[in-house]
Length: 336
Image (cartoon, rainbow, N blue to C red; front, side, top):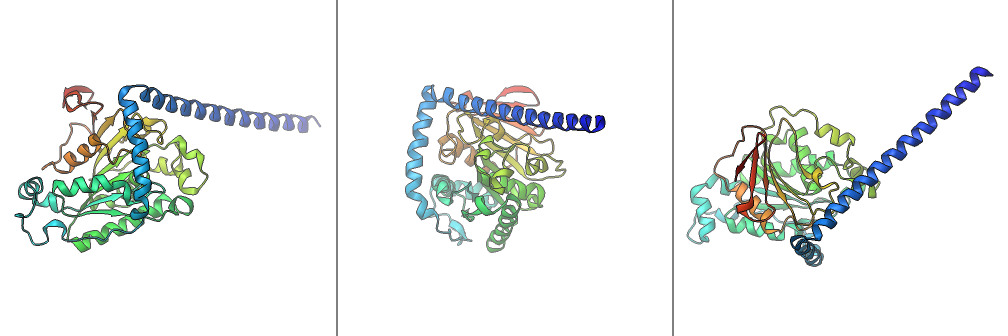
């Protein structure tokens, strides 16, 4: 009886300890959510934050109008603007890119939207890329049911197959990819875990939860669970990725109301070449249309040569104006 009693007591103790750990985890999560919401509220209290919140609300309404149109798949135009290799009918900015960097202008740019969205989120960005001179700008629509019945690994493989078709039809050896929110994680998994770095020259992520987001606890689907901090998929992405040749550019905002905490949209990985842009007052949905994030995308993709930091991480602050921008390299500060 004594042994049984001690066993029962031990089992009860383990049971109570498990409850205590779960309660502590819930409390820690609630604290992190509260801090993330607090960051957004404090940001909205500033003039820039109020302006950012207004832009977010306005774009949400406009996006709702554009959404049905965006549900239609975009037809790939392999030749882009330069099918006949003529520049006389191009705008000066387009002609400048073609003349100075024909290979860059001809590299397809593939746009990948976020959860429950479609290519309409890139209405502004795709137009800006075409006006800047990129001949092939193609937005991918994956199924809206992906968030309900799919998973990130499968979505990444499907993106890889789509990129192969883009390369085959355009004759290009590589592409640039811009991913918003979940689209950035899908593209990153393809690049980092499925050999996609052989095809993707540059991956730009906008508001992507690179280390997960606590808002993923709101839905219990398989894919959304993969977006939780510490999930198996997040752990896999943190594993070594030696020799990954893709250049990563990360744009994140302190006013992001979806990625919580907001710093989880940063990407820190010892094997990846990362350039980072921080915004102070842009909402999650507005990241593909905000002037500063669009500028970051355009300037990144129009550089003639890759800028390699002395170490693998470079960070820029786009909080206000270009004059206020700081670049951080190897722990030292220098003007951008």
